[in-house]
Length: 491
Image (cartoon, rainbow, N blue to C red; front, side, top):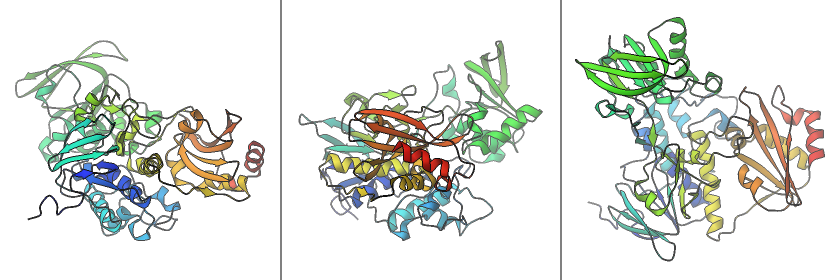
């Protein structure tokens, strides 16, 4: 039997400790290793995968991986076609989820939960990400010198920075009288036939609610989704979740077995063998009483912060998500960072409408890479910066056309080209708010109507000006003389 000292990362002191072995933790650890940052990775699980070892309930994801995309698997261009794999420099560790899917049912471009989990395990093995499994984080304290101490089931870990890559994975219920008597999404019976010919009420109209509705429609007699706010179909239609949303909403419109009601639930009562839900209409005022055999609370999740609030970690989103700086550090507790889908706690500028994809793997994998770089610099590591010799306009046009990080993290990440030719990617809000040498930051924006276009931010003499460039029908800004002239005039 392995002892405490026989497994990776025994208790002790490390510059950085990463908690979690889901995609956020794996990507952060890999990126730290590539930069030479000593760190420990701890996980209460017995293998990698994080939330994808349990969810989604009905097994198939919403994000896609095209196994036969135009771009070659393993290239940077292919990353836009593979939303689920993690990033690596070694060819063998790239596109792991897509590779697993090649051996499965290729009629789908969205992986199953099991394929996602297998892809994470393959990445951890091939990329050499070591994890101390079976080690549970239990509590946290800050020492007088500012260092952090994490108490775990194996002992104490002292560090200068802790990265919590635990996701937004703790079931959360709204404060509705009677809600304690109904299951949360996380506790739903996965046997769909259990709901055959039953009336089902789903509390909520976000991703997990529509996933349930979409999965149960072939079985349930009637499904009623209830929440105060209407679904913003203009936003949903531009997102990766539209597949799950649109079928139930179509049934709502044409008179099928699903209804989407805009109402605030006042209380839930047991009624015979089922439930009675009392609600008050919002977009259309009036009392509503709906009866059902089953009620499910699809009211979302929260980050499992445990005692971090005692150390000063503030939250947003009804206390469910940590409030973060542009580099994903707690806005109120220095040295405490977050990776994974909790990085949505840093909203960014969002000047033009649609924001980043930090809640999904294809967005937060880029966040983790930059977080590792930021930590390395803060710990005193020398980090190489790319240098562009000549052709600065051509360089920016190429970045705007092909860079997967700024295309995925629209309005959040920006490629910065300084006057001395140095180039790097940073959070756009950091560039706009920081003082630095003259430079241009290039990003991609998308407004609420779905129009996509590049934006340049020019910093000169301490001031920043914004330059919105026109869209291009083929999105190839390298081939546009108009964009070439505009970029050249700005830089």
